[in-house]
Length: 311
View 1 (cartoon, rainbow, N blue to C red):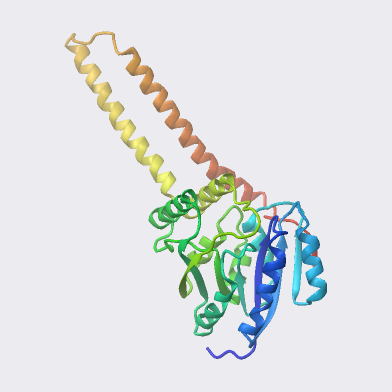
View 2 (tube, rainbow, N blue to C red; view 1 turned 30 degrees about the vertical axis):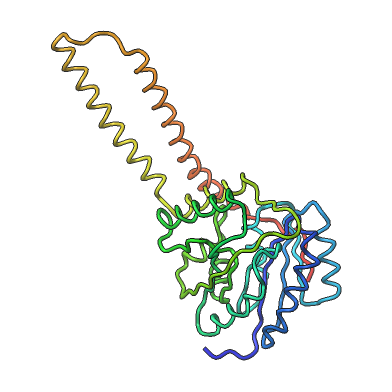
């Protein structure tokens, strides 16, 4: 594939990134010198930030016409913000990067080279990360489970720093799926892919808003969207429980017929009942997660609301 001059769009979700913006914007602007044969389009999506992120972005836009700013009506989450940016992107290829500079923007140059060679998806995968033990543990566990039970051959270190061909972006916009992990969706599409390993850097400025509740939601969204393992797990547990119950009932009947059964074991029975009730409630919760997502899709509400676009 021979490409001369091309348009390179970069989508950046913004949520309480006022301290990062003065560093992030110049870093992305410098890519023009690093990739001289591209025309840059920088798309920042303000995901309901409560600080002055929007004001800072609009000031940067006044100085650089390549910058576009999307203001969402409230906080819809980073995945929805990325989808909003992808819908506005016009590039021949589109990159996605976070605003905290933990991912090196300079790596886009290598990703562009891979894209020019014909790769439609180029993922920067985390070889390691300069983060706390608890963050590493959660991330490694999550991506290991994704690889084993949801999407085979999923990058072990995960990715959210990616470059895509225009065709991939069009397909994502057409799918327009809610309550999903858009990175997993990109991988699931199955186009020719390439990975570039890197070390995710420690956050230098600002405070992460990637809370435990958001991590748990992403975990649930990913497995409900891409795996039937939870349903199979419930079926297996139900089958095993039914077999054990049948065997226990048979045991009671035989002993009762031979007159060797005594009324005892009250504590054991109560323990079994409470355990099974807890198991049933957990299974109902899993079914509820699937049903809620089906309901959310059938209502056909948009995954985000754009308040204003500053082009």
